[in-house]
Length: 198
Image (cartoon, rainbow, N blue to C red):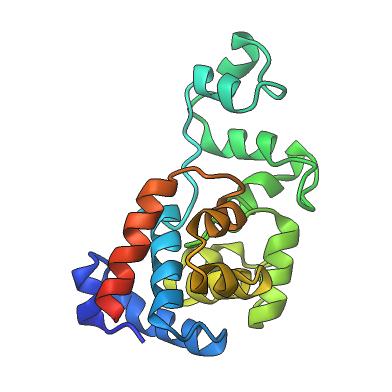
């Protein structure tokens, strides 16, 4: 289990030692390989355990590139550019159990925690698994105490230990990210964490 001094060697604040230890015990993430992969993958998702909510402060051109169907013209994109709450409510509306744009669900259930949990349905299921009502209290997902077990639930629910143990880091990245975004950095972070924990 990671100690505060080991986490400091990974440039992770010591406040994460207890939440990570409890998460690893609770979800059976037992080996240095598994724990290193968890820390490396989550570390990439949340800027090394420092950013617990998605940054949605995009310019118009970026909105058009990322979501061309939602922002088909510069005029439409300019109505949202620089307004993270408005962007979230648009891009996450009518998806993942979220209601329409006016409901505010997109912002309420924006990417959160160390695994960037997103959408009403994921908040509901993660909350049920860890025994907390994250739908009524979504800000809890943006705290170390709950961000770690939420990631542990996701890790277990998607059988991530299998990929970690086999060192199938690209397969693991696809499960967590949906693609291979940041794959090289993730591998560096996973190997570094495993080395510190071994």
